[in-house]
Each structure stands twice: as C-alpha cells, then as structure tokens.
Length: 115
Image (cartoon, rainbow, N blue to C red; front, side, top):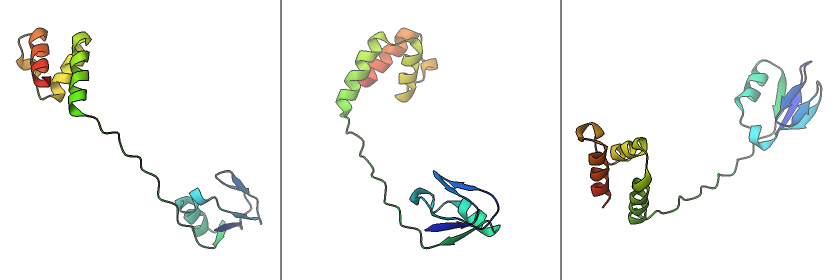
C-alpha cells in the first residue's frame, strides 16, 4: 500500500516521513490504521494499493504446571510467608480469614487445604 501526501504538511507514519507531494510505501504494521482513514477523509492523503494481510501472531502455549508441584511450592511458601501473603492464599483457596480465630488458625486451614 502506498500513501501520497496531497497536503501542505509533513506526515509521519511509523518511521516513514512523507513530505508534501511525495509518495511512500506504508509500513505494514500501519496499513490498517484508522489514522490513515481519517487523513484520507479530510483530504490530506491518497491511498493506493491493497493492504497486505498481516501474519497471525504466534501464540505460545503456557507451560503446564503440575497441580501437586504447585501445592508443594505453596506449602513451602506458607512456612515463611507474611500475614498478608497467608491471607491472600486463604482467599484464593476460598477460606475467609475473618472466620478464623487468629493467624495461626488461618495458617492451619490453608495448610489443610493444600495438603
């Protein structure tokens, strides 16, 4: 796709500068930009050619985490965790810290839930 600057202003698209009266190739990552359509509608530019179809982004799969390994790691963390971390872990496990007698009770219930 090419852009022709028919205005009296310099137009920048990505790393491409288009001076008045000049024609440049539009960088592929900007071909579907709404700004180009706005510039065209107000009469600043002419667009020629078709937009190339962008390649589909490569999606990496998330690593598979073994649930038992995750529980073991959380149990280890529980031994040295701060009060805030213990409360967060309790909430994640569906335990309401307000329903527990004290912090030791919260730790005990989280440990039971992870075991």
